[in-house]
Length: 77
Picture 1 (cartoon, rainbow, N blue to C red):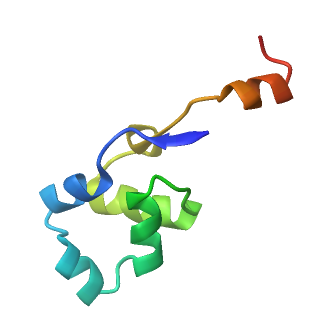
Picture 2: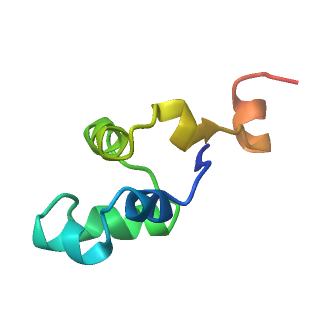
Picture 3: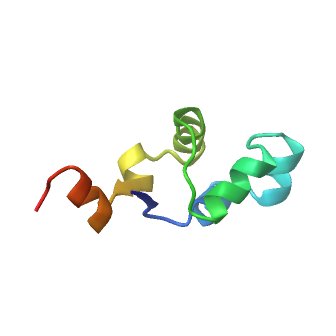
C-alpha cells in the first residue's frame, strides 16, 4: 500500500500554493485534492506536479508499506 509521508497540502502551502491558488489556477483537480486528503492514490502525473511545486522527490512524499494481505499474496514472510 502506498502512503503519504507528509501532509501534502501543508507542504504546498509552505511553498505558496494555498487551496485558493490551487483551485483558481487549476493546478490540481478538486477530485485529486480530495483523494490526497483521503490518503487515496494519485497518478504519476499528479505526483510529478506535486514534486515540481514542492521541490521534493517522490520518495519524500510517498512510501510503500506492505499490508499483511499484500505480503501473503506475494509470498513474503
